[in-house]
Image (cartoon, rainbow, N blue to C red):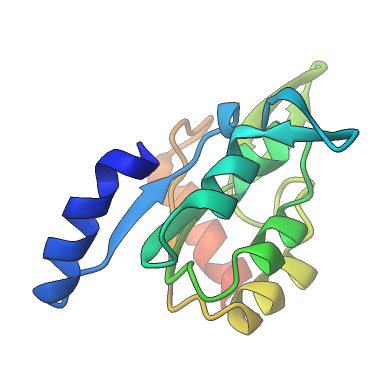
Length: 147
């Protein structure tokens, strides 16, 4: 993907358009070691891609992979103009998506980390709602309004 994206990035950049990649959990799976340290697909992606390839981080999926989203935000600073957020709760021992502020993600630190990293846009994207979706959106909006 990184190599195939190069001509696309160049053409879009010439037109004033940014090209980005949206993550899920699998990019954080460990597939090997370099210099005795575990390596993930995200490591390869961030270390070998064109810095003009933007990242559209999804903080839920980073957390779902067992990785600290704040560290990924810091590591990706300058390349994340846009992020997707949803909270993560555990019900009956199963993780599931939740409105922002109703789960376990540390928004008090994540939102400032996003601002520091240059995030311009935040999209609340709750794929699965366990009550009325508009109620979930309202709850997320009210929580985020505190920031």
